[in-house]
Image (cartoon, rainbow, N blue to C red):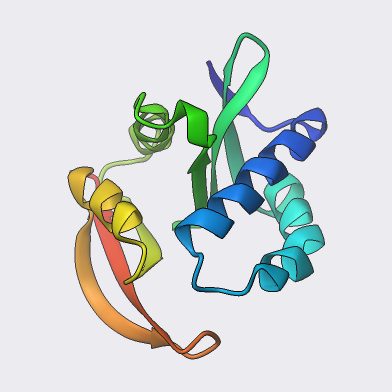
Length: 145
């Protein structure tokens, strides 16, 4: 089941977020993710549209979107490969109006992320330098037709 995040989901969502970033973006110092943890927690609950995938009362993954930018999409490591991320993204996309657009920034070194979004019809529209980390990132776009 997919539903909007509730406050009681936050601990599980944040655990998935931290572990996911440690793995997907291992080239970024772990301290960075811990430094922004509290602000991200507020954003997921109050500032962004965040949806969780729940099975047997357990949060297995989530997606968080600010306006038309996907800010995060992560699935618990042991539950990857079961299309939970795809289901979350499609749930959100299916509720968008025609011609709506989404975009996501993915670090070049995050090949799994690039493949995930490419397989879901996101197109790489821009390559840019993320100056904060001095890392190349792709801006990938999708448009509902």
